[in-house]
Length: 397
Image (cartoon, rainbow, N blue to C red; front, side, top):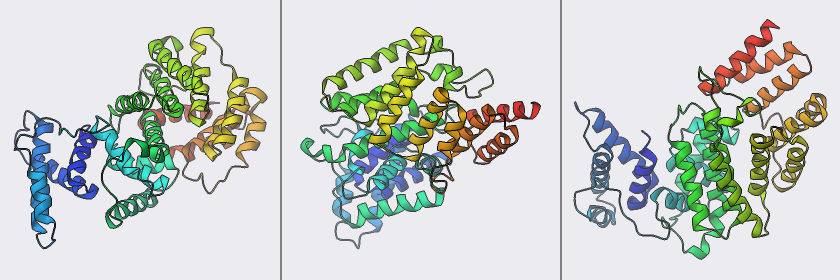
């Protein structure tokens, strides 16, 4: 259900317990599925039932000294939960507020980001594992440990004062980045067709809340640039269209202009960071809509800077693909051969990149093997259709 993350966020803000919020929502969904006819106001009905389930669960733990007090707190406010719970805070949005709460500095940055992606953004563990380049069981354990840390360490389940937002900002921005990465990979909207629009909304809200933070402005720009191409990303059968083959006339020029405006504002603050470089790369791609060409040398130079600011295997992989456009596939293949294979064993993009470069070199057999490895990693439907087409073209010679 697309509204799940927002409702869980509202519940968690009241319950101050992530597991309890998810459990209560799950029980409410089970109750809804048992009905012969769904309620007219589904979200309000689910919130009301989930709140009651949570109250019941707390009352069953009456042996705990604070149970009755917590139940009374949740019970306040009457029975009508048809509207969104109002929690007047400095951040006027339940989901974004909960992302800030989950990104507590006492938890490791990857763990708190994964926790926020699961609880607040509602991503399945498989999708979170994919963006972190790890296995699903390993990611499940990481999220479980993060929840336990929140509960056992007594971490305050509340938004800190604005002056303390900075110590959480890196993890908050990473959460938004990875949530959109997952949504972008899911071009056909199989996970949640509304997720990319919601992440755009959250990124824009952070930019509005923190106009003095250049990286917040740059992340909003990055998300908007990716969103600007959504209408051109699928063909008539729903297969993914690579960026280089998209029709730029179908890109959203108003979104590109908004992204450029955010980047101009970020540049005026004179504090450069990785999100500004990433957005600059995407802006360079966007120029093709205006002059018909892609400046690959500029893109390669930007990746060189990004490797200095935020080195990592995926940045190196994307830099290698830019290098192939400038100097040919062989140097790019050599770069890929130096990447940490153990770290990237769950990285489907590595196999896809290898297949592309090997095809350019004329090694169709090795390229087909790389495509088979990518297809074996259960890609989303749009990407699978694209890869299957590439595999057929290789077989046909």
